[in-house]
Amino acid sequence: MIMKIRNPKLMALMLSGILGVSVLGGCSGEKKTEEKKEVTQEDDSKEDLFEDDAYEDDAYEDEGYPDMGDETGNISTVGQFETTDIEGNAYTEKVFADYDLTLVNVLATWCSPCVQELPELQKLYEEMEGKKVGVIGIVMDTAEDNGQYAKEAIEKTKELKEKAAITFPLLVPDTGYLNGRLSVIQGYPTTFFVDKEGNIVGQTYEGSTDLEAWREVVENELANLKGEE
Image (cartoon, rainbow, N blue to C red):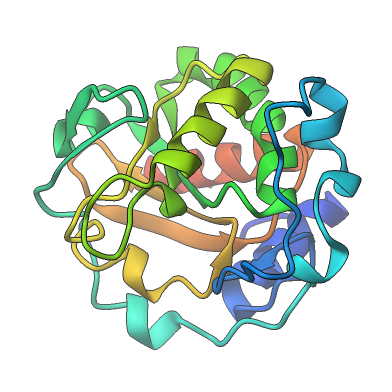
């Protein structure tokens, strides 16, 4: 099947997914704790949270990510898992059953492009829910390496959720990292798709973009899932 790509931003996303190179806004997967600027409770305006100057520039340089095709190619399903959202509500793999296709956006609170993309993903969710397309965010820094909640990151995510009026789930990563799929991610944000049976489908996209580009990506991924030209 040949996918026709007319949107230059979509082309950038597709190149990102195929080549494993972030050509849009993205962050290294390793948190730079000494270099990033904290968003404190005093930063109570939406502009402070969603503009670039809320973060240090060198904390989210656009870096080339290694090609992950061989590593992720054998991970075909998210498997069975148990986790919670940032409010403590329980979630399992059944979260995917309500939608034909779910966009899974993997992000971190310290990553400026991730944060800036949240309002765009909310708009996408509102547009696409009627087409049986869901959106889920997985906030990687809300869990410590020992599996415990990272309280500071959870509180920051709650603040971002409120300011961006997010209504789609923002999950804490489960201890199995979605059958290992999350453990091979090299940078944030990274986005992939899951069907209603929990199978990982379509392309992987690295970097952030806007509603227009995401809309076209989703339409193409949905068409491919349904076997349409």
